Image 1: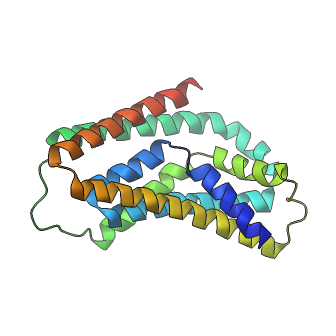
Image 2: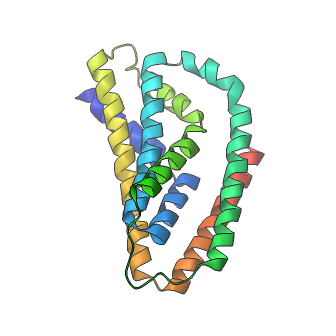
Length: 204
């Protein structure tokens, strides 16, 4: 089970630092409820699963593959975040109080949310470098059997998913408890924070 706990540690290490995805998941929870936010978090966790798998399969050799595309993808991710933040701010200005009877999102909306957050997280190829550096840095890369590699990937995925689910719950709780004006202010603040994060990504 050592591989599993190493994966859990790596999963929390990549998921917990507050970034644009975390802010967006919380914002989705405020605006759309837990179910939407959970699928958003599941999309982000799936991207971590993909990159953790690539890391244990390819190891540090993947860093040489990722390096040439890291710069353009960094710029693309920043531009995408800016567009998301601008659209979010426009929607927040037009936001009306929700109806008294809450309407649950349908499967198509949930699937779209999942795919959108999977795509947003996948465009950050630095994640695969992080996972590869993590297992190599700990000196466990060469000793991992296929079973341990599977446990590592599973642990990383479950850790990421549990953290994203917590963010979804926090956002949904705030959405149910906060007055409409406070919810709108929180959404505006979140999108402004995303703009700041995008700016920081661009100047790196």
